[in-house]
Length: 304
Ligand SMILES: Nc1nc2c(ncn2[C@@H]2O[C@H](COP(=O)(O)OP(=O)(O)OP(=O)(O)O)[C@@H](O)[C@H]2O)c(=O)[nH]1
Ligand SMILES: [Mg+2]
Image (cartoon, rainbow, N blue to C red; front, side, top):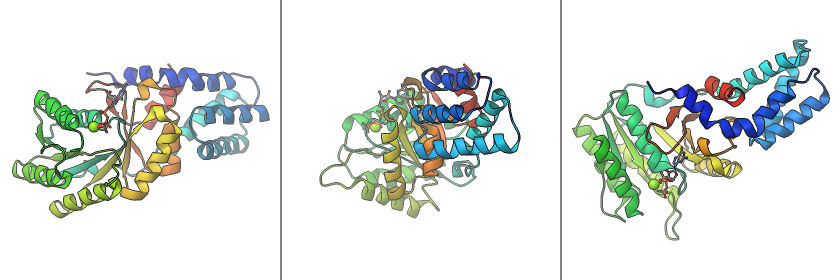
């Protein structure tokens, strides 16, 4: 069995070493002082947790420390970890797990964020759960994107529905859903373009794809996953706001956590966006995807 725990810890090494290790040292001090809170705030902001989320988090921890009469720094750190987990928990469960005839997942995000790779990973993940998956190569702007998906699908034995480059992405989605229904598949995962062409409104196009899916399957797409590159830090957060407003994303896949010290981003996404992180990307291989688990994630930030 693939060990997610050690893979996660390994992937979080940079994030842990850069800032969270320092937070641990901070709480290694003997006394809780005003300086401790100031230093904690500065470190969390440095860790890309985001100003708003940092302020909320530090206030909550400080309040509890005061109310609970905590005097030991080690106990204060336990509270910090609890409040970090609380920030990430409590989101609605993914609609993907409900039973229905066909589940449709739309995957969106800007160029290079890791959409196509993530789709291969998701297909692998759900396939391993015994689900029959069909992929829709609806990023028709780039011939390479279609090929990338086809090659992977062939290798994994997953059907990929594609059209010619520059074809109408809506037609690809329509055909993929039709084929999936005919083949009694469990799930369709749709790849989309991430670029903004001059004569092309990406958000309007994505909205059109959603409408096509909705006409074929009740309440589809059941999940609209935004793929965000963790290495871009606060920029990714700005993208996320944009996508959320325009196409109502229901979840985030945060990719490339293995190559960055910006793991603190997870908190900013959950809190400032109110969109849950559903999966995290921990490498380039097809198995390097993990369902997001707040408990394991926070533990991994502190303990190597
Ligand atoms: N280290 C690491 N690399 C990743 C991860 N996810 C994706 N990548 C890499 O990121 C690069 C871009 O990934 P793609 O899947 O092609 O991204 P995309 O969003 O489909 O890009 P476009 O099709 O150009 O819009 C590739 O080199 C991937 O191998 C991850 O979790 N970790
Ligand atoms: Mg792609």
